[in-house]
Length: 104
Length: 284
Image 1 (cartoon, one colour):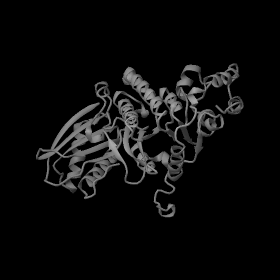
Image 2 (cartoon, chains in turn cyan, red):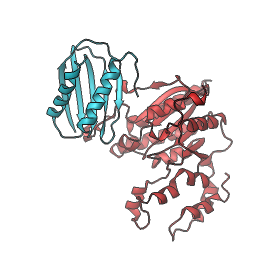
Image 3 (cartoon, one colour):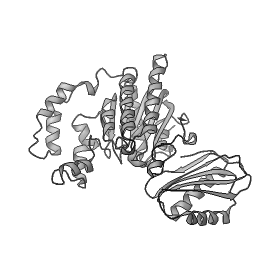
């Protein structure tokens, strides 16, 4: 298992506590929580050995569409493919930034 | 709410995660989760063994109402580590049940619904998981004297190991056709006894011995039904309304032993043979 802490610049935006996905084969859980720090703190636990560079590339691709909000994001990855990871991250961000608070 | 307009109609219960299962069984809007994932109460043992943890440790515990009756609802998430129970997951279940016992003794009325999807003890947390299961079992035995404790096994994982004993202690045990219930899981038996005796890949054989229909026919569970969300919900309501039963399955020791004596261990047992033996005097 690898752990990474990635810090990204972020914009000020109200967020909902959000949890999507689960730690099952080929999937991941993504939690978004409020944070006092003026950035996006992303903590990653991953069972795959793809390395920090892959995570950074994935996050940069999401940032190209929407700047990240100030938050603490936790990722518990159980060997998900990049496509699944991207879908889960976008799902979590969408839920965190919509008005209605909810989690699965 | 009328069934015709209910969007949950034709939703398969088996495909739902633990949190959704609770939401579907409880009265709409009544769910309040205890020890939520945002509390970050994760297993302290998995990370040090290089295993990715989950924020709810695979167990969801909630307060809510069913049919207006106050309940504690507990669901195990079979997709995280096979629904196995370690220190945190086990403590969440045991703690909730113990609180329900105390609340009932203090004059409140709180029943319990447990949705099992588990292989039993989490081997990485062996002794702590075992201890937690023992605590869960004693809490159920205490609570079932005061309130109905309804257990539900729907699959896909089923209910095995120490948690199969836990299921047997509940006031009422309900299964769907896809559910499986057994002490040792099929792969464990195959590994121990050989593929000639027990082929874990022979699905008709496995479900023929441990599936919901067989367990119902042999009198080991109270009911079996389809896995539509509405049907599951109605059955849980029906059994909660029955209240505390006069006798418990786990007290029928002698009749169970008598039936076990009739099992021929020289030959592979079949689904039909098991039905014949266990149907005799199936009433407890």
